[in-house]
Image 1 (cartoon, rainbow, N blue to C red):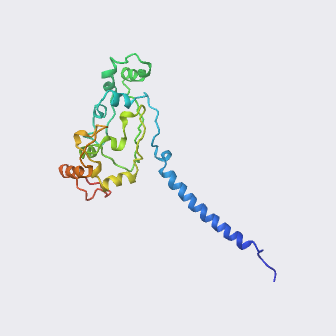
Image 2 (spheres, one colour):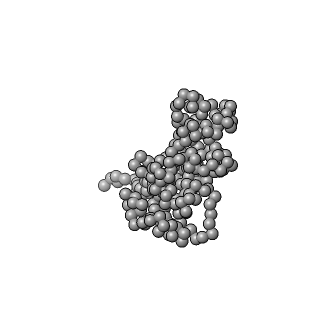
Image 3 (cartoon, rainbow, N blue to C red):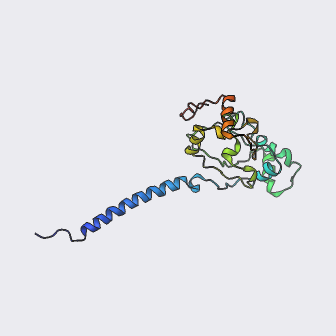
Amino acid sequence: MTQVFNRSADTWLRFGLFSLMVGLIGGLAVALMFDRSDYRTDRGWVVDQPIPFSHAHHAGELGIDCRYCHASVETSAEAGLPPTYTCMSCHSQIWSDSDVLEPLRRSLRERIPLHWQRVAKLPDYVYFHHAVHVQAGVACVSCHGPVDRMPLLSKSEPLNMGQCLACHRDPAPNLRPRELVTQMDWSTDEDRRKMGRRLMKVYHINPVGLTDCGGAP
């Protein structure tokens, strides 16, 4: 009887199956690495803005509180962006002739708001309420990083589902007195977990249900 397959057929079949398995596993690994990469999450990337606003100068050197510009962060789902007249309350007298601030002056003259580009983006299906977190003692730096040291604002954290769930499962170490949420360099000698558990009682934070889709506070 004539031999249908040559002697090397079995070897090539095994090699092909092995290569296929390696390719599938490698492809899965690459996909997982890409999903967690800074390229995918935009962490560390700077977004072009109508004016190169420096948080390092305003929040760091000048010590301007976050709430001066993000005025609704304690009462609304959105932190809010400063209207032109808020910026001009200072820059009508300081750097009033600077070329780099011409878009700001034009915004005031033409009464057209500046179009700031969002840096910390969440998917459309995610509902995040700033006031709920701020009133619970979650600091700005926890999600936005040390903005007082950023000449140009960039995304400091991945802000993905894993990060949110980790905090919701164990919120205590991430809490501080709510009057200190905007202080970038705040620290304490008290054990953070112990303090956090105490604050959870003070702020009526119920750990049951924090990981439910409803996100009950």
